Amino acid sequence: MTLQPQVFDTIIIGAGAAGLMCAGVAAMRGRRVLVLDHAQNVGEKIRISGGGRCNFTNLFAKPENFVSQNPRFCISALNRFTQHDFIKMVQDAGIAYHEREHGQLFCDNSATDIIDMLVKRCTTSGAHLQLHTAITGVEKLDSGFRVETDRGIFAGTSLVIATGGYSIPKIGATGFGHALAKRFGLRVVPTRAGLTPLTFEGELLNRIKDLSGIAVEARIRSNKADFTEALLFTHRGLSGPAILQISSYWNEGDTLRIDLAPGQDAFDVLITAKHATPKQDVATAVATLLPKRLAKLLVDEAGGPGRLCETGDKTLKRVADIINDWRVTPSGSEGYRTAEVTVGGVDTRDLSSKTLETKTVPGLYFIGEVVDVTGELGGFNFQWAWSSGFAAGQYV
Ligand code: FDA
Image (tube, rainbow, N blue to C red; front, side, top):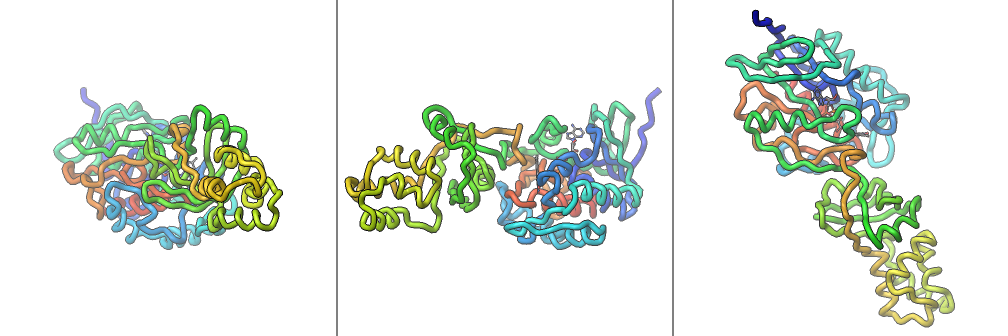
């Protein structure tokens, strides 16, 4: 006897940010919605995001804040459900929030406020959430999809994949969505860890390690990306917002150009110091711009000149160049263990930018981080989850 599947209009795999958003929107349209997830709890990444306070969107979100092989793909969804639409949802739910630098919005109390709001929208509109369920098979039928799990068989007219990226595997991240996309003949842009600390090896690491804990404001450039934010030296290499941002644009082998004193002409500072206090050590003069230990490392890198009066202008220029344009090549990144996002994913050429439905498999949708759209640091990744979830929710 074959088991009859339980029938829904829409099955969503993944009860994270995008999946919950999509479920609420579809259920409010009167669709019978089932959300499946293998985790014990919904929205685990929302829970741990923003240091437990969830940086849920950004006041200044715009398409330029997203990395993708097709930078224009995200425009349609972002325009139809903007940061202001999500902020209204948060306000309507009575969630207290505040703005931090660069337009980042965080909950005052806890990220669980956002999870509770999304779950409430799902359950009050009749969407069914089934957790702790392993997906054992997905099959395309003439009229939709059949999803087999260790807790029953389900059929749906449409199937939404919202299983996110690879980052933080210990809380349930898997490559399920990428593998399924390939199985259905879709292209997948090669994936790598994004918003992650960068690591160094050998002699450079030995020197950087000694600076562990030091933070400075820095301007970092790589592959046309350009960020000025805090940079942190760690025992494995470099971290801090500036490095996390650049990591999403950095490819193995690329050299980073780092201005450790943005807005200041280090050569000018050193020449002025040479005239005013000629007996001062070069390292002491550099320490007027940078923390002492960092100043010493950079001066050593330029050959370790002693007093300003004994140092030729050419050597001072070399020191200044290292301060304003320090060039370092990371050996790698800390990877998915600590990354906030996965760069790459389901190729947008195979998806409709309006509905997020695949062009070749009618009824199959991909939303959220599993798609090749990756936000910068600052609430942009959640905005993509909300916008893409909303867009698909209107059509599934
Ligand atoms: P998400 O990862 O949220 O959900 C995927 C769901 O699919 C999960 O519930 C998972 O269990 C489920 N799943 C996976 N594989 C499955 C399988 N095989 N079977 C069944 N279910 C499966 N962004 C931001 O904008 N602001 C922030 O403050 C932060 N902070 C932050 C901190 C940390 C530590 C991390 C790791 C990430 C962030 N992010 C962030 C990024 C943000 O969390 C992320 O981009 C979104 O959660 C992506 O939403 P999705 O719904 O696409 O995936």
